Amino acid sequence: MRRSRQQLSREECIDILQQATSGVLAVMGDGGYPYTVPLSHVYADGHLYFHSAIQGHKVDAIRNDSRCSFCVIAQDEVHPETFTTHFKSVVAFGQIHVIEDDAERLAALRRLGLRHAPHDHAGLQREIDKDFARVLMLRLDIEHLSGKQAIELVPHH
Image (tube, rainbow, N blue to C red; front, side):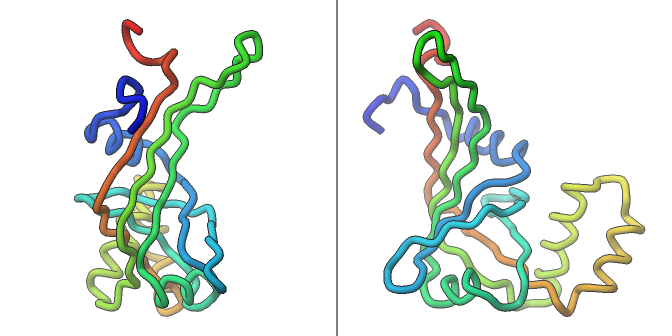
């Protein structure tokens, strides 16, 4: 990173991924054009998990090329008086895969569901029972994390 003072530590990057509820997935789409899509996610043990419909442009792109990135913006405050933005963001790079194993798929779906509704185990189970056959789960195996913050947020700049 060119401005190393603004670089976030790996721990800070992981904290942002754990706290955020959504971000933007970038994959290689048709004709070599990047394809981005906003997604809800959950971070666990060096992986990001997402749910998806069984088919569609995103799934086709992932099956064609597993390389991807996922961006989360944790802070975005415009300060017009100084013509700047106070921001924090993280980009995770890695390989994304469709989870084929039903046990792993179920565990990932539970993890994501409880991330968004941590106290509604019964409601989550009803949703899983109703929709499990129609839900695809994706796992992004993180190879590299890059986080950056505005210079104004760096302590003692």
